[in-house]
Amino acid sequence: MSVLRLVNLNKSFGALVVADSVTMDVMAGEALGIIGPNGAGKSTLFNLIAGNISADSGSIEFNGADVTSAPTMQRTKAGIGRTFQIPQPFENMTVFENLLAAAAFGQDRPEAQLVDECAEILEKTGLLTQANLPAGKLSLLERKRLELSRALATRPKLLLLDEIAGGLTEAECQSLVGTIRDIHARGVTIVWIEHVLHALTSVVERLVVLDFGRIIASGAPNKVIMMDEVREIYLGMEA
Image (cartoon, rainbow, N blue to C red; front, side, top):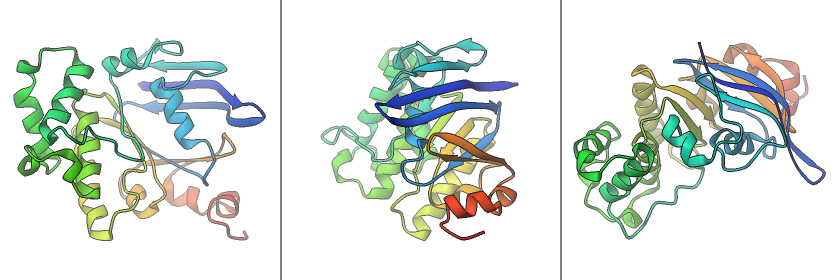
C-alpha cells in the first residue's frame, strides 16, 4: 500500500527548475533514501511534501487523500513529520518543553495528556537525562536528537529526515543511525535525504537519485550507487 504518492510534481523559482515532473510512490513501512548533488532539489521536495511551499503543478497524495493544497498544519496532523537540516529549537525552553510544544501542535491534544508520551520519546532518543536542560546548551548530536524527537512527538506515519547525520563524528553518526533503525523497526515509514552514504545505506531498502529536480535513478542502494550516470553526476567520477 502506498503511503505517499507524488504525480508529475513541478516547481520552479523563476528559471530555476527544482522539481521536474517528479513521480514517486513510497510504500507503507518502507525506508527510502534520496541522494543527489547540492542544488538537486532534495530539500525542496521535502518542502513540497510537508507543505512549506506549494507545487506549480502535479499532485501529492498521503494515505490516499489529496493533500496538494493542504496547509502544513493539516499535513502534520494527518501524519507527516519532518526534521530540518539545521535544528532550530526554542533555545530558552527546556528539552522537555520543546518536545511538549511539538506534541501539542501535532496531535491537537491537551498538554497534560502528552507528558508521559513525551518522556517515552526522550527515552527512546537518548535525551531523557537532558530533559530539564535548556535546548540552547545542547551539543550538535543532542540537537539532532531533539529535532528527531520533536518530529516523533507529532506521531508521524511518514517521517522525513533531512540530512540528520550531517556534521556528526563517526561514533555520533552510528549512534543516531541505531536510533533511526529502531524507529523504522516500529513500523514508521521513512524518507531520508542524506550525504553520509554509509549511514543512509545501512538503513534504507531503496535509493532514489535526484539531479536538477529530476529522478534519474531508483532501486536497490548497491545497484543505484554503481550506475554510470549516478557516479558521474553525484560522485563526480568518470564512468
